[in-house]
Image (cartoon, rainbow, N blue to C red; front, side, top):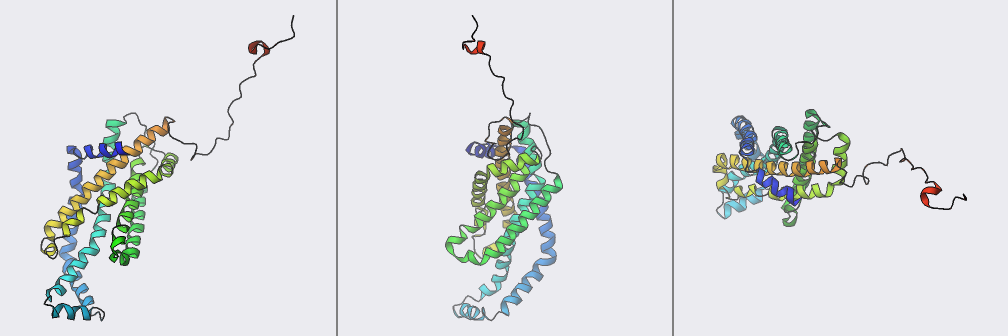
Length: 294
């Protein structure tokens, strides 16, 4: 696990990896710019109208005006919209890295470290897409369910990394083994190394909280959004690229060990039905026992 961590960190400095990290950023930025051009202002207007019509928030607006913070009301709708869109942006970035970059990163690692590892194509591209989308929908559902609990200080430090860690473990572990492992090998490795892979995903989830510091400038984040959005997307992309390399190094090494018989396979695989061959009994002459002959 530690060896794979440092190998992934070194691979992130590879020029090809840096160039590949820009692909999801460009795709996401072009799509985000098109969506923002058509839907940003209507979304802010709709959210502001919903906040103005809220009876619960009427007291809060009156208190803001009493203390001279009437401008907060106008800035609250864009801030809330960014808060809602940030998890969606993270999930889209992860899926983009998984679909656009992970196959190339797996080929790079396999070519440099495991050139003799056979390809068994245990999962197709459509299987990877379905797995990534299904896992992402489950993660978004967990975010929506747990979002009200994020206001509790201890839980906001625990729940998001757990969700991102689980999602990273599901997506990156599957894609790292999709080309080289068979379906049985992939299931075996993901079950046998589940705790380790989940711990790796949790570390990546904690690292994923770092780009959110870019939005800690307060209300200036609204004015600096055209600059902060691409920076945060690239930061998330680099973190997910690192996680893809980390999972690839670990999983391919585990797969090689599995095929060489160095892993504990008997705990996962069923016992073979055919019993081993029984060696023929030794003759009395071979054992040195008395034969009764004179």
